[in-house]
Every structure is written in structure tokens, then in C-alpha cells.
Amino acid sequence: MTTTITTVAAVREQVAAARVAGRRVALVPTMGALHEGHLALVAHAREVADVVVVSVFVNPMQFGPKDDFTRYPRDLDGDRGLLAEAGADVLFAPEATELLPDGRTQVRVTAGQIGDTLEGRVRPGHFDGVLTIVLKLLHVVGPDVVVFGQKDAQQVFLVRRMIRDLDVPVGLEVVQTIREDDGLARSSRNRYLDAGARRLARLVPAALDAAESAADRDADAMTAAAQSALAGEDGVVLDYLAVVDPATFRPVDDGYRGRALVLVAARVGGTRLIDNRFVHLG
Image (cartoon, rainbow, N blue to C red; front, side, top):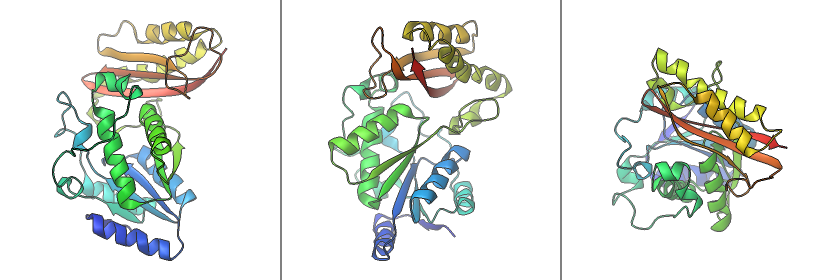
């Protein structure tokens, strides 16, 4: 049975009781509208911990002026049912006034230079808002381990760096992207795709396929192959396409050989999709 908690005091009390019993606690931070991708995170959390806390909080601090905070999908009752089936122990679903009693915090985490690139360039301030709320959740819940999905690769990189740079006493577990049968990465935003947009959306993972097929050459060849896969479709608008070193999240240098990460973001029928894939260059 999943216990729903809405206050900071109550979730801290629940976690404290688990610790007294010698139980290991995992946190899965989400913004709700849960799908199979989120449930894969819960399943992994069950493997690495005794108590699984799933937070559902639509974070206003990560939405910019061009993002529609009110349009973000919300289905707390549906989320509660899915989490009960998945075996989550606690659903932490605070109101904004509980987690942000004074509105957006005056003191916040800064994501740094990497936070201003790629997703951060398209959505200025986004990662500052993400990291600030993630850090608040880590302080509130105090888990032994926190679980994220690889689909949000830049977020994972920045959370890992925040944990390291600020000496946050928590382990980070990353779960591979869960995909639909047609290869599209599972996302809460997929529900906005009509039939025509859904067909076009398949070009996003197809671009990663094309990039990987050119990985035996160089990054420029990979980029060109991916762009070619997306070309000629008026309904697909590319935001960015990049090949980065996973250790630094910087674009790879000419002649780079080894593990690389290909990232793509595109707008399809008005819905913004992101995806990524690890490849071996050279």
C-alpha cells in the first residue's frame, strides 16, 4: 500500500521511522503524469532500497516565461494508482505553498556554464530551478539514493555534479530510457501528439539511429547523418543536435575517440521532444 503524504514534517517522520528500523531509503523525484518510464525508476528503486519515496511536484521554478506551467499534465489520482501497483511505499505530493512557502526561493542553486548550454540555452534558468528543487527534496527526504532517468541526460549530468560539488550525502542511480514500440522515448509530453505528429516524432529516435550509423567516422559525420534523417519534414523543427563528451558535457573535439553522447531536441507538431544515445566514436 502506498501512503500519500503532503507535508515536509510528515515525510521526514516517515523516513526517520524507516531509518530507526535500519531500512535503506530511495527517492524518485517526478513531476507526475506518470508513465512506464517513471515506473521503471520505481522498479529500480525497489531493487536498491527497502523504502521507496516518489515525489510528485510540478516545479514552477523550472518553467520559463515561454513555457506553459499551467498546461503541464497533472493526474495525481492516476499517479497514486500506478504507484500502488508498482509498490512505492510513499507518495510525497506537497502543494507549492508547502515546498515553496515564500514563492520562488531567493537563494537557489546555479547550474553553471553547462546549465546555459543545449537545454539551458533554449530554456534559460531551467536547470537552476531543477537543481534548487532537487536539492530541497534531498534535504527534506534525506534518502540514501536518488533515482533519475537517462532520457533527461543533461539534468542527470548536472544533478551528479551538484551532488559532488556540494558534498550531498546521497548515491545517484540512473536508469536507461524506456521506449515505445516505435522507438520513441516515453515522455509525459507524448500525450500531446496527434496521429500525424506521432508519425513525425519517430524521426527523433531515427536521427539517433543515423548518428550511430556514422560513429565509425567522426562527430561531424554523425551530426550530418542525424540532420539528414530530420530534413525535409515541415512538421519537425530542430532545436539542437550535439555530440558531447559524457564526462564534461562539452562538444567533442576533432579526432575524439571513445564513448560519446548524442543529444537531440526537436519540436514536433508544437510538442517539444528530447532524446539521447551513448555511442562509441571511432
